[in-house]
Length: 127
Image (cartoon, rainbow, N blue to C red; front, side):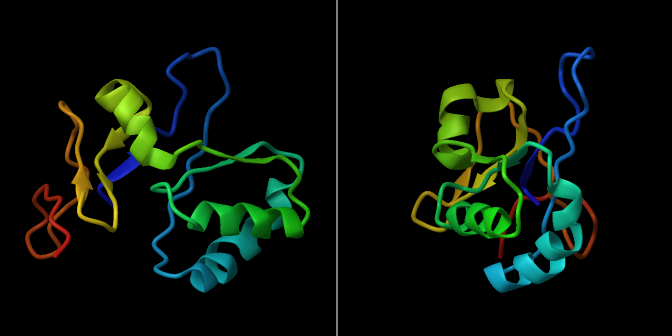
């Protein structure tokens, strides 16, 4: 992962925010490996989906709603627009990779969250 939302609220008086990370590569994997095993625990809770800004959130939120999760929202404009607005001062840590000519979107001051598979050192390369 090159970026993620922080797992806790910055305001200590607020409830904990659980961010669920997915290592899936295609939507079918996400539905069967991530969503289906936990869908019952999401019913009655507020769910915020976030993606780079593409179609995956549209599909994922529709899928959860079809399974009975009523309160599903999406981050408007995805991580791309969020980072344009808040940079490294917001709740998102690290960088965002988009699948076009922009590549890695790294706001000034962003920490490196990724690690090299070989040596374990901090790394954001996606080769």
